[in-house]
Length: 161
Image 1 (cartoon, rainbow, N blue to C red):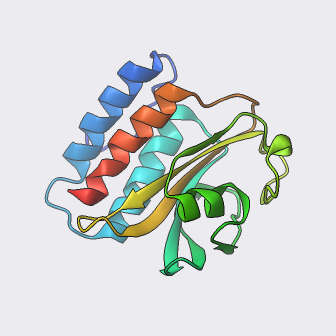
Image 2 (image 1 turned 135 degrees about the vertical axis):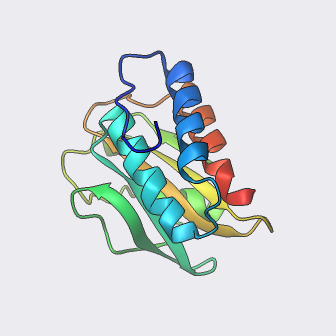
């Protein structure tokens, strides 16, 4: 299981996230490199659900600036200020932000015009320090819900272990 990416779109979301959590734990067993983990998580989540864009924006200046990190998909924005767009809002407020329609989100930053909905989850390390946000974009409106919030928050808990 650890050597392949899984397509989990045929499963109900809670079951898909359970299976993905097992795979991520298996693949990252013994890994203590957060960048390698970010690259792996981006890849596995992206392929499991077939998203438009899946990846991390790393904190490069605490409380000021995020910079694109490991991701899957088309080009991402390189830098995002805290408080700007969905990623900057999630970072500044340290809370998961689910956006059903990006055109309705004040200050949304368009990195790919095909994006229609988005979820962004803060990522903290063992000390509780914000190290990144995890951003997932879909070309479909309303693609993300509470199952995605709970599932992604659980997966990203790996960074706090």
